[in-house]
Image (cartoon, rainbow, N blue to C red; front, side, top):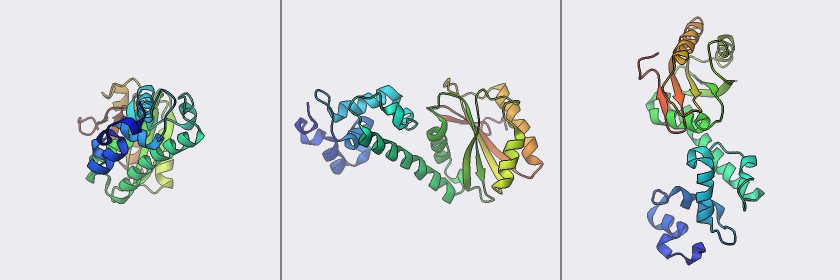
Length: 224
């Protein structure tokens, strides 16, 4: 069935204009971006296929143009539009964190980290460098691979903190396995970095363990 053959109040565009974007499902929002489908598959079905293939919106947010090639019917123009919209979502959150004190909007911090790290297929260690008012200066991905005290080099974190004139940092890394509980290795790594950064008067405010569905604060668990 073509979208134009759906009842008017069920068509994504008309539904959005009448009831607002919150009334639309993820697949319906994607259908508006895609606009057209393929013979035998309308834009709504293609939107659902994208969500199924990439693990929902969170997975799609970390999908680049090359990975989208596997979806039949997504030509260069549609791939570029999707990637552009997803990048705008990441940048919007980053701008919000740069304008406000980081922990005045704690859910925004979690959302931002999930967008950046949640669906990566390998472990990434990142640092949010903050100014004296706890506003975001930059997020930098510093290390990849299995994270231990020996694979994350405190010296490199200290060098970047000094270069960015950071007053404090928030540490973050992802667990591709989906298990958000911090490990003993995570606790040891956090303490090592706290000690190193403390020597240059840079505070470690928190360390988040991130998955595609949540970002767990070690500070809230009393592990910092």
